[in-house]
Image 1 (cartoon, one colour):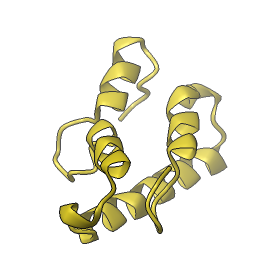
Image 2: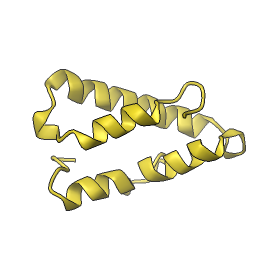
Image 3: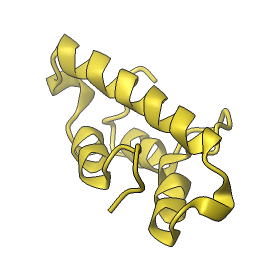
Amino acid sequence: MSDAGRQSFTDKATAAVKPDSQKSTTEHVGDKFKGKGDSAASSMQPQSEKSTTQQVGDTFSSNSNETQPSLTQKAKNAVGLGGSH
């Protein structure tokens, strides 16, 4: 479950599992838009107000706004599904 105003974990997982090569242009744009919105919401929400599950989710999706790839992106890269990110 995600906090109010945040992208659901199901949506994140679905987007992460499907290879970029199999996504339409619309899916690529949607993923990027949703990801940016979720990252902005993560940045604006104080850590103390996040649920434990949202904190864990942010760790895996790298919503700490650092320049390092997320754990999900590292996993996709390791199995050759990372695309050109």
